[in-house]
Image 1 (cartoon, helix red, strand yellow):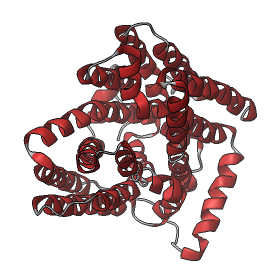
Image 2: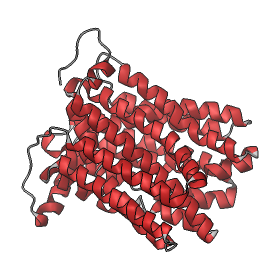
Image 3: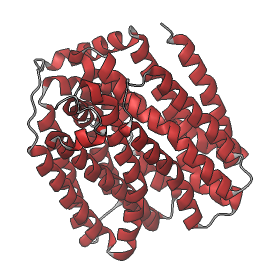
Image 4: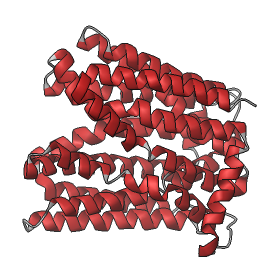
Length: 403
């Protein structure tokens, strides 16, 4: 696509490109349905077993493939057609949703079915950065990478708010079967959208016995480049120490503020709302592309404001602070991909995005720690301690990744 017309909004330029719009819309649909599935499966698991651990097991099944297969997915995306990989994933999730719908309709749905479907969804999700997000950045052109990724991230923040809400409504009104039927239909709509994208890429020859070597080569490239090293380190810190707060947010709201379910939902929606607004601002931004300083500043700002939010004396102040924290998340999420697309060698970008996926997959480790701390110290102290440790870890990563 052209670099843009002077005086025109960057978003107008992006939305004038058919390939970008198709990839962006497909991402919005699949992300929304991912959150719908997560909430519906969690609610069903709790109704089925009455166990919070069972719910966490089902939800964590989606994160395990990111930790174990994220790096390999990047190497595969360098060798196979990214468009076809993306379409195959959408087809697989559609089939998985249909199977769950049939099992629910016949009264045969069990916890293990949800766990296996979660593993399938997580395996497909491991390709998100290396396939669709990379294609979004490439469709935008080199001078619109951050704006394109920010706009796509803004849509992701919207789905984090709308998806769980829709999942709750679906579960309460139409039931599990209909919810998964709706999800399967929208996965297929996303597949059709991607099928119309004209995509070309230079591909490496896929040699199975060289996959590990290709991954290690990507590790060498990333660790040898200060900015890429920074992105990997900050991604681990944020997923382990910062984002883990969402796992005990309901307990935090109930204990700290005696919040109702609706008020807890407001707490959960606050940070995505802030990220949405800030992401729109980044997408509309003109001028030079922001870089590593913005990435670090946004990450650190989120952690600092998170500490203030959990120590807030009132629910409404905590909500306001979490909205402000979302501004930092928008910078982190946009530049997590944007810096790789701007700094990494073109032949290794998908592999390095695969490494980032593996770093994202470390999140469940933080969930286990914050859960254990919450049992011992209470949710407010647990989140504050994890965030404080994350701030120290961020400082260490920055010190280790200076040029």
